[in-house]
Image (cartoon, rainbow, N blue to C red; front, side, top):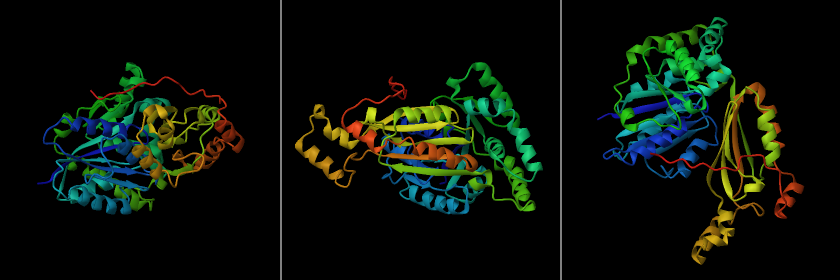
Length: 403
């Protein structure tokens, strides 16, 4: 019997991983439901897969989990890996429903065609997560998307507005995320702006991924006939204009860079960069990092447009080992030391791993500015000596629990 399948699509940073986490948590309370998960991320760093792994909702070691990092799932190579992932995730025949989280640069049409060609899958939900804040701030509440996309096509090119519009147009449910960060009037105006792009889709407001899994699982079959003509029209336009493939992020001048460094970020310089030097072309940055002022915490950086979030993901192993208040047994300490044998001499397992995604014209300049935020040798010496650092980041911690 074909496995009911749901796609979580939407632009960079819209909230797809948060939604995925919420759905997985809810699945624990549903009998006879076993979710399979395929996560796609444009960056080779695979932050989304790591977040799901550290959240203890699902493990990378699970036979029902697969990750496709470093490419769009709709590209030729991505689709090849997707088919392989489907085979692995469904191999033991325990999965009752498959969730697919695409990268933010994914065009829906090639993926939809691929799913339709797989007899073991049956698509029900195509959920497009729309970032209400980004549409408000960067796209005139969403009203600018259609005219800009039309201008691009008339000029025989494609841009980010085309990708945003088409992610909405292929969906059968639109989720206006981060609804708690805008007023009711803004939410209404955004809904009115995106509705003409897809009058057939339900529109729901969403915050922190608060969508009912039971309602997702009960969605009707996806109507391929509704979108087939549009998909063929896009394919024909691409061929007629000898255009770059719609499935490639490069078509929209979207690129990514990865920073890997064991050093901490200087809290004040990092704050200054993200409050004063963040350009509109930096769509997304995310990853794990540490600060000398909070050196026990593994922090998750999560930036979309002008919005920034910091989350505590875990504690670094080296800080846990150094914390006498935990009363670790000799066996536990020895096991933890074994895991740190190849760790950095000064920092242990602490490290910064950050991916930045945005317009190719702005990426390198911004990444260079970020690299200047790493602590210098003198600042590292000051950290070792227990000296204070200016730290303007919020100190208050809020805990979120699934209901």
